[in-house]
Amino acid sequence: MMIHSIHYFNTFIKVAENSPSLVAEMLPLKGDVPTVANLQFNTVSHNPYAFTSDEVLFAVSAKRKKLDKRRLDKEQELIFSKRQPYFRAFPLPKGYGWGVHSNEEGEISPYALNEDAYHRFLLDESLQKVKAIRSDRKTNSK
Image 1 (cartoon, helix red, strand yellow):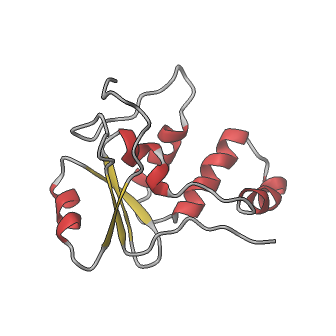
Image 2 (tube, helix red, strand yellow):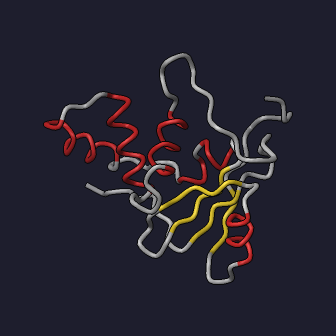
């Protein structure tokens, strides 16, 4: 079975061109249930450079599905047997004003659009830069 990885290495994912956010936003909850975006953000912001994008994708999926430890290996195999969206298609860089840096090992950390570090990554010639995938939204209303 083919395994599909979504890693980037030495890459900075820029905020999407049509992001409604001009500064990084805290991600809103929907009631008491954290959204996928909340779970992704909490995972990477509380543990910078501790996880690859594959690990974040899997951790969030396992948490949302409330998987017990006996099913983790099987679920991981199932998830990565299909193509997954790259982190540049995830909510943080698409709509909430967070860029994502991926280091040499593929481990990631978010950076706020309105922070100096975000702009230093843009100027770093040793990094590949990619834009987050644009939203389908026609207007920038939030």
